[in-house]
Length: 467
Ligand SMILES: *[C@@H]1O[C@H](CO)[C@@H](O)[C@H](O)[C@H]1NC(C)=O
Ligand SMILES: *[C@@H]1O[C@H](CO)[C@@H](O)[C@H](O)[C@H]1NC(C)=O
Ligand SMILES: *[C@@H]1O[C@H](CO)[C@@H](O)[C@H](O)[C@H]1NC(C)=O
Ligand SMILES: [Zn+2]
Image 1: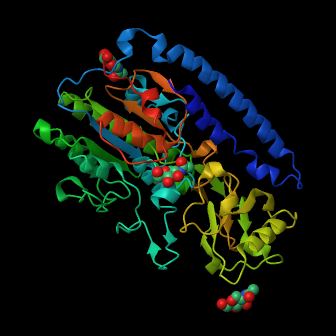
Image 2 (image 1 turned 45 degrees about the vertical axis):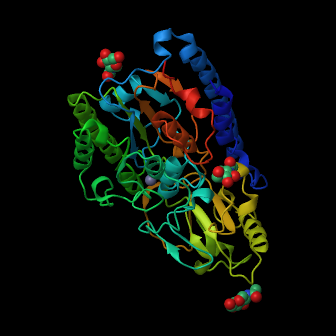
């Protein structure tokens, strides 16, 4: 088992905390230090917990009957059903009884402290990292909205031209290997690439108004096909609880209800699979794309407050918050702009200035993997958890939720649950980054994948081998 690699991934994610805090060491509350101590302490506890879990739960210490994959009973080949519940923050599964999700957890393998999203912790970059195994600069979807710096064309979440979508998503990998995939919504799934043609029969065009139950029922119908026509890879996507999270933040009763509803549709899926006698044969991988944190009006940084140092006009700003992305016109030096912004922020004269720090993208911490694409604007700002960046004071009052922050924040974590023949029952594994999922799925399907940013050893560290 490749424990070391997993621990490194975990460490990589928790190392980031000092980032914002060191930058503000001249402006002094001791809160950052307290926070750091708390984090250091939590990391230690987490590390110890992992060590204990690894020794008590690793297959090598259990009986041999649990060290090999369970043979398929009905299906002629492995089938992976990849489910995303958008904005399912790690921990939501404990907000309210989730008996169906817990069936998957208790009889499957779970990331004990959640799945680590890629930076920026936004919906499109993360969904596409999950299915390509690539960090955003390599798969091209570096934000939910961005510009091509050469053509000036704009990418939006409705852009389906293949030039935007780099890398090789799983449905294409499956098609390229001569097998059938079926997508019931997933960012990028409508894009025609390689041997993936987004066939009418097995590729649903996004329509958020389709009830979750209908989505589940359609996927279940795929299991009524002649056995050799059942797609080997399927996706299923739910907009909740992200939708509610933005409106009310993570700690609201509306979230509790949304989580309960997601649990209900998972129950509908499990029952349908059981009725067809394939529940134990199908590999269900349930994930989210990112977490959610509460935001409120007093936690704001205004770019207009930086005017004494540098005039940042709205047309320089490609996105405000939580990912601040600035592209100054070519007659300005980006390096100079960064220096001036940071001067202003650390002057003590900008409200909440110590909660934001800007970087030339190439100077961002390497662990964020957010430099290697000409689509990424030259200046990137990282804002402290729960804070927002706006242009100017509008006086509007609102509290809600957001994501897109540094992927090291625990609030940005989401869930990973694997249930199926190659997942040990009741096993807990350490947190890992979602770019590992691509290799995990190609390994289960036994198809040849494309080069990516997941580690080759990850699948064997998590999956039970066939005897
Ligand atoms: C877990 O799987 C076993 C079969 O190995 C089954 O008897 C049990 O009911 C399952 N538990 C749940 C909660 O689904
Ligand atoms: C940069 O160019 C714009 C016009 O495109 C001009 O208004 C501005 O003054 C110039 N700034 C500098 C620093 O040269
Ligand atoms: C990620 O994968 C791409 C494609 O294989 C590769 O070009 C890039 O160097 C990788 N980056 C990292 C950080 O591993
Ligand atoms: Zn999302």
